[in-house]
Amino acid sequence: MKDRVHTFGRRDALRLGAGAVLLAGLDLGTAQARTDLHTDPDEADYVIIGSGPGGTPLAANLAAAGFTVLVLEAGPAEGDRRWYDVPVLSNFAVSEDTRIRWDFYVQHYSDLDYNATCSQWVTGRGVLYPRASALGGCTAHNATITMAADPADWAFIQRLTGDDGWNPETMWGHWERFLSWQPTEFGLVDIFKIDPQLGRIVASAVTEAQALPGGGDVRNQRSINDRAFVDAGTQGFFYPPQSTRHGKRHSMRERLLSARAAHPSRLIVRTGALAERVVLAPGPDGRRRAAPATTWPGSACPSRSTCPAWAATSRTGTRCRWSPSTRPSSCSRRAPSARPRWTRA
Ligand SMILES: Cc1cc2nc3c(=O)[nH]c(=O)nc-3n(C[C@H](O)[C@H](O)[C@H](O)COP(=O)(O)OP(=O)(O)OC[C@H]3O[C@@H](n4cnc5c(N)ncnc54)[C@H](O)[C@@H]3O)c2cc1C
Image (cartoon, rainbow, N blue to C red; front, top):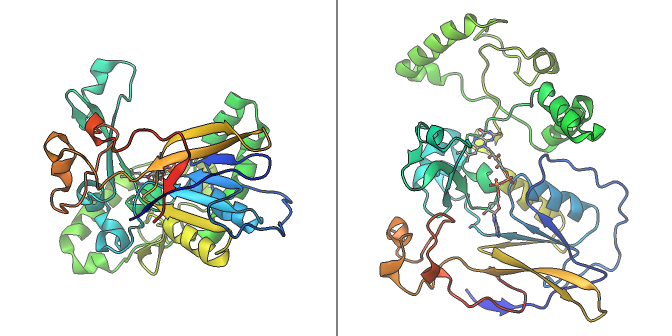
């Protein structure tokens, strides 16, 4: 791993896209494909921090629209592990995969005492809120269940923001676009024949579900994402639609990799690149430009003994894997740089 310092900035400004967009499939309208594409990966029209469901579709759509895009992802590329591929092993990935695990602790409620009643409460820290730091973000370890949102929720946001772009009909259009590149599958039904205990658990769930309004039918192969069910808010027993291909996890990671394959000169992805600051500074033309300053979050923790995150990764023995909740000051390996930098994978 070799660090490089990159100067950064191009055209009027470097526009910074943070990985916080809510839904895939942004319409980028008629952005003109550019003919003067950068071939130098040290420069980009857009920098997107984070490759989860917020950042990845944005990066893919911008690259498809002709812009050069640099994606900075703090975590590794992942994807080479069984618990990545197999959705039912997601819990294992969440708790055991120290390469990608980021344990946050939060307060879910303003009533602090009430937080302590949560089953994931940890005294002195808060409520455990696990996240993944990897290509694809939390879709690298989530349960892959892919369900359309309740139209009432979109209507609520529409009212709240006064922005009609959130209306349920428009959002359904975005959902359909999302499904066009992220189709869903159902899990193996035959597994119930192989595993009788699982069959019994499911049978009792079916019994419970049938008591719900609208009932539920285990033989019903229609998806819970059928428009009629979504609009009616139908409850019942459904096979969960999963974001898999041929039974394997198909996450934002795959989306990003296929976009990169389609636009290799426009979409640059750096893993192991943690953006620590956004530097705003005048460029040579006097106009303000933005650049993220990043460091590699491992490898050089100065003191193994004082690093509380070290124990979590001692099995790998190679790096101090801090999480936002555990990061000790001794793990900031470098004095903040005045110049933009990121590390090259
Ligand atoms: C255990 C678990 C199970 C879940 N199950 C489901 C499910 O079955 N179905 C479902 O629809 N949703 C599920 N979710 C929720 C869903 O995965 C998340 O809502 C979604 O991934 C959030 O997307 P995001 O892009 O906002 O953030 P994230 O997916 O968290 O991605 C953020 C990315 O940004 C990177 N990053 C953050 N800061 C920096 C920085 N400073 N520099 C560089 N990179 C940075 C992180 O490393 C990460 O890769 C689950 C979530 C969890 C944690």
